[in-house]
Length: 170
Image (cartoon, rainbow, N blue to C red):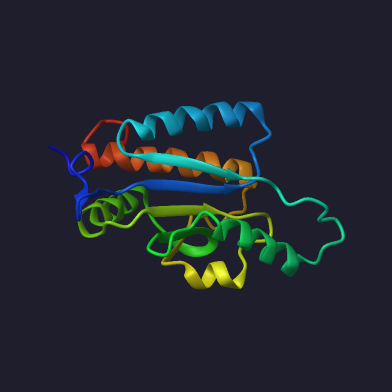
């Protein structure tokens, strides 16, 4: 059997979580993201948690926005989570490398893996300090709603690589 379906460490089933700030307002992007979420869930326990947008930020300094958003994020984190920030300054992985990293995590860790997509200004210092890894999808800049979809597609593709399915043509 595949490592994906046999991931039990210390008797606990490891879960993957995508924690994102603000809902996806584009109906088409939301629909496709839902499709990939459903596909990923067929391979592994996976949840998407969407935090509400901050309100009344027009005159709020950027650092204050990041701190407030960070406090919201903290409410959903456990002390033993493996925290992965999706950050433009993070490490870039080829898809096959992401699949290899996931497979290694499945074998070596029993922590919940939480991928976090922050708001438009990035992450607070506290959240950055808690992270175990930062990954970047590209050196290019994308809208946050599109980043969600791109990440979900790459996560799905990584699972197909792990399973040896023909979705990835390399």
